[in-house]
Length: 378
Ligand SMILES: [Zn+2]
Image (tube, rainbow, N blue to C red; front, side, top):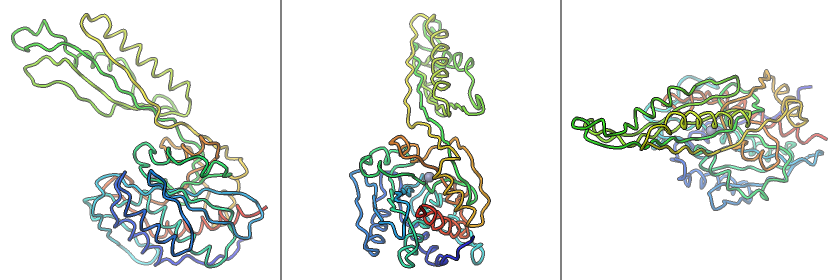
């Protein structure tokens, strides 16, 4: 049965979003957004903690809750560059208003179109005395730098919670992401020998050429259904008249199967050994780092089922998917809190054409209230 719930204040929601995107918050410099949010929580009489990494932690006691559940809601304050001096532009009317940037910065809807509905849903829930479980808002810093803020939140702040929901994905409302990959960065450094390129090239070892020969034997791109790899950055050489003694390439691997990723790393290393070791005077280094780890929360998990019921109650089609992108949920699930990611409605994130429809933020607010209601049920 559909319950009639009070409607979000669309204009206030839009205003919150516009205020948030106008505040500069590159990764590591989220202060203005944090202070803004602190003011909003203070107005609501909610105590908060800002930890050493700048993450905001807010505990909101449950209301009319029969479940005893604690639910974490999370989003991030930081925005990818270029993001200084965002000037939002609004087109269209009513809920169909589209908000985009003026074209020389991103909009920052990733993730401020998640944060604004969190604030609106919270204010409405408190004002109208709506049912909700015990909530913990974890609003993080440096998410765009390999989830670097969330990594440092002390687990005792949240690890007792039953479930975590991030509002941080593109797509229509109703999108539920239950699986995300492990992410590994790697770096290959090839050392050769520099000599004059015209007078005695035969005495040198061309590191760029050696690296190319090795890379030519390695597959990149979509390796299988769940595994991707990419070369993203290359440098080496000093001048056209010098045989280069150094070539460096950096790349990434993503996938849902840890063993598969480790096998791929071993394969890359084997190719490097086979190509470079036989060349006298040449050497290489191969390093890798796991930046965050895979999670999967089964679609039939009871708390995922509560989310799905709320999606239905909001009148949305359910779209259960896996993603190959990471989020703070990758961090929190590692502390034993199962979770999912929901859409924040933003489109074309990390680009100058990033945008969001107001209606997506309104629906996001409604969906959140419906989710809280489901989590308050026995
Ligand atoms: Zn994001």
